[in-house]
Structures are given as structure tokens and as C-alpha cells.
Image (cartoon, rainbow, N blue to C red; front, side):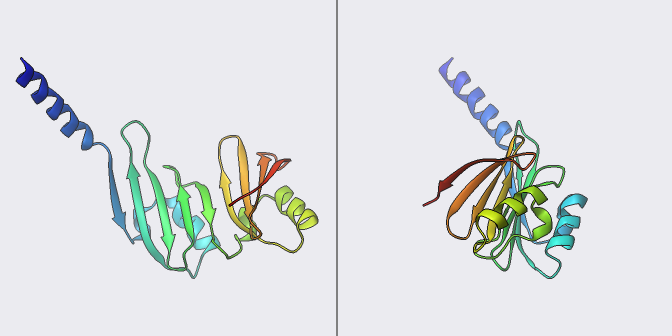
Length: 148
């Protein structure tokens, strides 16, 4: 009986592992159309270094794109961006909602936005001076913290 149970566990584990895997590519064509358009619009000259396709058992596929210049962009299964991390470079202005751009220019005039993350409830912005700002989806300021 124990052998049967162990065999069943092994079969189930093997089957489930087939549903959750990562695939690597450098072809933009492997991305959803919306993600391809985003890259063309905001990073037209940047070359893709790697695209990681994350397929999850209970969640849909998401995509991690790393550009040759070090920028990392994450997209959801529909090809909508969820995170843009330009490291030390400035995030393209068109990605950042106007209310957030205005707030940062007024309150942090000597820094640039180097990272933006969007969730279902908020935006998180990281500035070049290691300050992290949180805004609601309307672009209204919510909080500030120093990052390490």
C-alpha cells in the first residue's frame, strides 16, 4: 500500500511540474501584441537581451523582459506592463501618469523616476535618490519611504 501511495505522489508531482515551467527567448514575437507595441513605443532602439516566459499552474502566463541596457520590464498575460525598472536611467515620461509626474517634479525637482510598478490598487515609484513613493490609481500621493 505504501508503494502505491508513493507511486501516486510521484505521478501527480510529475504531472503538475509539466504545468509550471519557464521558457527563455530573445524574440519579441514571443510576447503578446500589447507588450510588443509597448516596447516599440517606449524603447524603440533598445535590444532585447532575454525574455522569460513564466507559466504558472493556477495563474496565467507573465513575461519578464530584460533589455541589453539593463532595463527590466514585466508584463502580465495580456501584455500590459506591471513593472518598469530602468536601474539608473529615467523611466520614459509617457509611462508615468501625469498626476504622478507633476507631484514628483514639484516635490523632488532634482531627481528622476527610475522605477514604476503598477498593481490593482496602487503605483509605486522609485526615485534616483532611493526614495519610494506610493500613489493610488488616480495618482494621488499616499506614502513615502527610504529604500535600502
